[in-house]
Amino acid sequence: MAAVVCALAAIGGAAVWWFYNSGYLLYYGDALAHLNIARRIVDSRTPGYDQIGTVWLPLPHLLMLPLVGNDWWWRSGLAGALPSAASFVAAGAFLFAAVRRALGSSAAAWAAVLLVAANPNLLYLQSIPMTEVMLFCCLFAIAYFTVAFHQDQKWRQVAGAGVAALAATLTRYEGWFLIPFVALFFLLRARRNRVLAAALFSLIACLGPLYWMGHNWWYFGDPLEFYRGVYSAKGIYQNSLARGMQPYQGDHNWPKAALYYSVAVRLCVGLPLLLLGALGMAATIRRRRLWLPALFLLPPIFYIWSMHSGGTPIFVPQLWPYSYYNTRYGLAALPFLAVTAAALIALIPARFRAGALAAVVVVVGSTWALAAAPESWVCWKESEVNSAQRRAWTAEAAAFLRERYTGGGIFTAFGDLGGVFLEAGLPLRETLHSGNAPHWQGAVARPDLFLWEEWAVASSDTPMVASALQRARKSGVRYDCVRIIALRDAPVIEIYRRTR
Image (tube, rainbow, N blue to C red; front, side, top):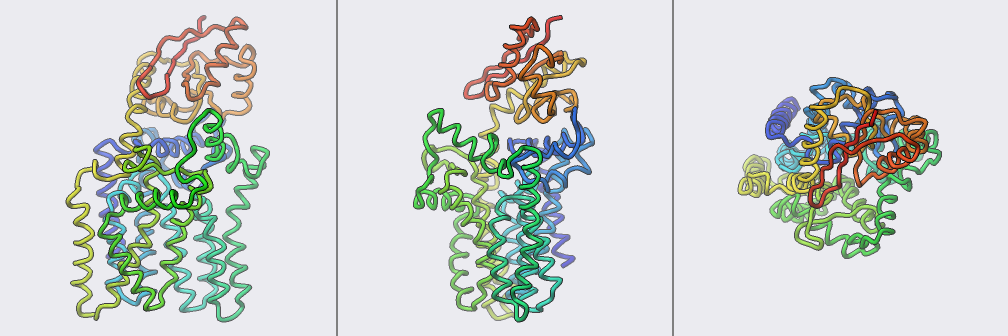
């Protein structure tokens, strides 16, 4: 196990170093948002717990807190990258232990770990402030504790699976989807006190969803605000449809949802692993070692179901609209394929397993060896393409403010505009944004009474700021637009300064 941890730490650390030096840590808009949500807990007009927000689950942001308060760690993006990389190491350790127990083969366990760890799309995500690798850590911990329970029937293993599932439910919503299936595992596999084992697991795991619904009810008045609120994926989608956008591909269409997801999987994992995983599935069926593949198949099923329900789109460059969006969701199939491919090695006589391990890793690794540039890694490519305009206007707006801002406060929205202040080196407490209740609501509704900031930064994507400034003008409070940044296929950014 020590060798596994050391190898993963070396691989993950090298990846973080390379992506950091290449300047890629904050290409994903979601990565920037996760980092700034964590930052505003400690750096805000109204710092504190309520800055966690409503839609994104809290655990990843809490893990960033020890580092994100430092200006350099925050501005570099490393405050979010390092917790993700630590999760990568822990995830690999749990995966190794789970597969070794399930298949009875260290070589097969090494194969599963290396097939996951050598994937450049996953290495990119574990190097930036994203949450997918953190979910993998929780998922692999559930795998280990459930396999161990099947063999040992210990109550601490039920509790361990419950705690891992609790962490998963506070990391990504796929974790909520896992709970009934893992509870069913304990109900079927416990040799005694079956109902009690399933109930103990469920009691611990369900604390996460209950807490989050309570959080949303207390702060936003609706326990399902994260699901149907204005900032939720469902709310954004419904508003877009109302403005004339075409429905997402896969919306209430199972074949299209499966098609788009399957293409995303192929782009994320490569064709060789897809073929090996399919062969390995036959091996797992033959040996009746079905629990790990079944468990690891749940996240891909969740994504196809989510696409069908309309809340989650996936765009791939091979299919209409020939663009990139949420391609990283295809990585959810990586653990399933890695474990089923590893099952092939467990079928081989012990003296040949080392050679088979090397052959499998070489065959799958050849996909990425022949495509060693980031341009060939779909997750990096998505972040690069979709962030090009944002990075351009962020740099221009940040340079403008860096040279001229000397205090007085900035009235703005949050979201992508938070990157302007990060790049300009301005603490978030200099801004009045949507997380600063009730002052923000007062400034938007009655700017003549509550809007006191010297500066304002508005975006056409978030019109509340510009609308408030227009209302302020009618009341005699004048803000002059001192800079307009208008790039093709990008929101218009306007910077205002109050007229004294």
